[in-house]
Amino acid sequence: MTKVIMNIGYNEYVLDIQDAVTVMEIMTKAQKYKAKYTSGDYTHHVWDNQGDNPITFLKPINENLYRTAKLAGEPKDD
Picture 1: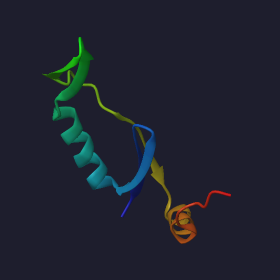
Picture 2 (picture 1 turned 45 degrees about the vertical axis):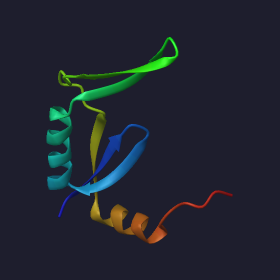
Picture 3 (picture 1 turned 180 degrees about the vertical axis):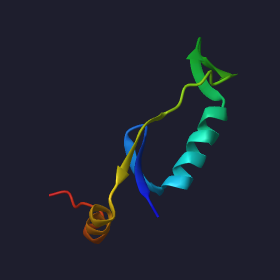
Picture 4 (picture 1 turned 135 degrees about the vertical axis):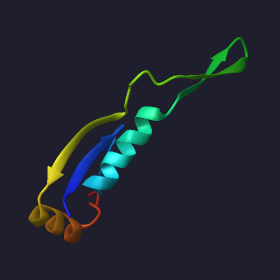
């Protein structure tokens, strides 16, 4: 099955393309939320998404690259 790299915020994830489309559809329906600190207390806000989507790109990943990256696993910090 075709896989894609999906960017959400500062992270990238690999998903089957069908799952990536489902996530995108769900996120376009999600409402936004923000807690704002004002005058020593928090106010909480929820509003319609208005088409904004935190997913900034979908990029196909070929099977050979996916398998090689999967074998490499999580990178180690030196």
